[in-house]
Image 1 (cartoon, one colour):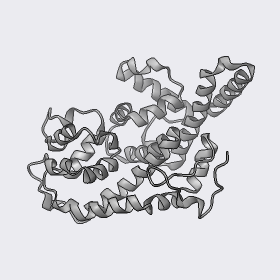
Image 2 (cartoon, helix red, strand yellow):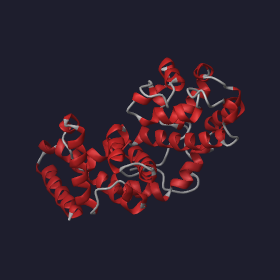
Image 3 (cartoon, rainbow, N blue to C red):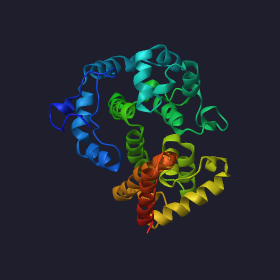
Image 4 (cartoon, rainbow, N blue to C red):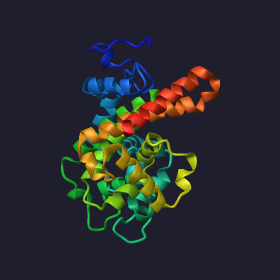
Length: 291
């Protein structure tokens, strides 16, 4: 309440610590739909923010001169753009760890980066190729900076959204990463394991299906079985490949926001009968979605 109405002036952003503040006047799925309708304008406003423009220009100017992981982590400004492009901005202080990730030979069985569950580190490693003895910096094509900056813009916008509404950030992340995962040439089991090993994706699935806090303590095979069963109830299919279809992703996101609201009511159910009534209504809505 009290947020500016959507429009050109409002969507240019306001001064904030991150130099851009997204407009998120509503919570839940209704708020998500508003964000989707204004996404292009809000993302354009974020990209036009002066600090982001300066960081992008610096990256374009300097990145070609970086020929080692040590040189990259020594330049905090370059490293910030690179890490943010992969959703790893929180690792900016962990330079020694990131250097180890970048220098690890990904194709060598048992290497440091190959043993990491979080695929974002593998993607970072592959993008720069510092750990691959058969790849030199000169082999990275001219579009490298363009691809990195495009990813940086997307992730920076998600970070800005997350400062106001973490659920919205996770939904944006899911919208991109789940579609990418569905398109990958890998087995369904591998895709499910990727979801379980990716914190942002796991959080959405666990919330969407109202799974208990002890769910992660189960064997991985059992976790996959449960998620497949819940997904089949929701969409009629237990595959990740179904998320090549944007409508399937929207079905999961709608369920995620509704379940999140129900969980919030459950957590505060002792506040009074009004909350309990809302809880009952929310649970009925969930049963309706499940059919």
